[in-house]
Amino acid sequence: MNNQQSAMNNLPIQLSQQRLESFLNRINQATVNPEILSTILEEFSITLEELYQQQQELVTTNNASQIELQHYRELFNSTSEAYFVTNLTGQIHTANPAASMMLNISPNYIIGKTLPGFVAESHRKAFCNQLEQVIQSSQSMGWDVQLQPRHGKSFPAAIAVSPIRDNHGNLTGLRWLISDVSQRQQAEVLRQELAEQQELSELKSRFLSTVSHEFRTPLTTILSSSEMLERYSDRLSPERKAIHFQKISQSVDYMTQLLEDILIYSKADAEKLEFNPTVVDLGEFCQNVVEDLHLEAANQERIQFKCNDDDIGGNFDPKLLRQIVSNLLTNALKYSPNGDPVDFELNREENQAIIMIRDRGIGIPPNDQVHLFEPFHRAQNTGTINGTGLGLAIVKKAVDLHQGKISVQSQIDIGTTFTIKFPLLNSKNFESGDDKSSPD
Ligand code: ADP
Image (tube, rainbow, N blue to C red; front, side):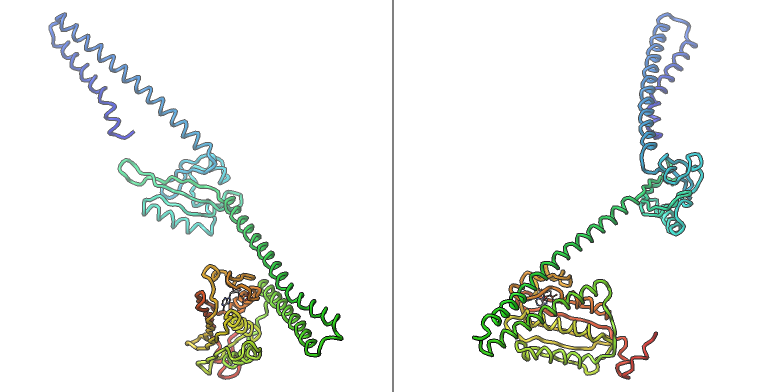
């Protein structure tokens, strides 16, 4: 109840007192006249009645306040969250039973202790800074902290603190609500583990469906060609036989490549991919990859290679670099079913080598672009074009090992551009042809 309210409640009492005083004066002054005396006594009786009513009202209000207070006391004592009232330095004036349980200290001993004393040492400085901020801003605040109960294990807790002010608005103390969030954090860890497991099982099923699908086609080819050779060996011309042998060997190559990709990816995923950097002339290296790809009949001269700087050298792992460049070029050729040319540019920008591969093919839908580097992910628009969805996952791992960055820009039916930026920290070695001078 504030001052104004209590003044209002006291008003009728003051009025009654004034009336009593006035009629006592009148009695004292009056030569006793029975009429006046009866009026005075009547007034006296009214005043008494009013006083009685006011007293009844006060009793009722007091009872209601007591009940309300009891409710709050029960709530304060029974809640599982810790409540404290402290002064501005954090010295505890009031604490509920949950607070003494949380800090493992009996209710008698908790009073007078300071809250910062129950904060784990590694968090104490930050806690005191926060406390300072609450006082400076005079605002309610919340933050997480590691609490250290007496003789117990520290645990994470969430704090909500609000200022207590006196009638003049001056800050006099702090009200604290502290909850143990270790269970919430454990639940969060469990949730994350569950999500990882789900992701893993999704990955496994994608792996099985891709592998079984990708193996079925070459196995069917091998089966039918070998049956033809077995059954009709005497009737087949040498050319037809050669075609069947070629089909068998291509299918075996395809399956070997698929197994190789799976192996590389699983090694990379387990962080076991070997990274053996050595000095590489990037221009010459890329030219060789292009020539190898042009050996295949379908790709003849489709890659337009442009090396804009003859002097781009650095430390690269040649095996991984080949995976990167040939996977991106093969994709650019494969996903340009009309046989359009593919641009391949090599540039140097300060200490970076920049590889850019641009095709004019089917493009990648925006929804798929975000999942592009996930294993076994294939975009919706691949149609009958073969693939496992492993190539780009391997490329990403290999680029990461070189501390490079890969990005993609693509538009459906317009084309796709992959850009890779490699840091050329050791380009000096390339100029001197000596890779032993790298700093330890
Ligand atoms: P895949 O064996 O399926 O080609 P990748 O991992 O190399 O596997 O590529 C993943 C998916 O990214 C492909 O299935 C395809 O949907 C899309 N993709 C990659 N490169 C291109 C490209 N140049 N043009 C269009 N789509 C591409």
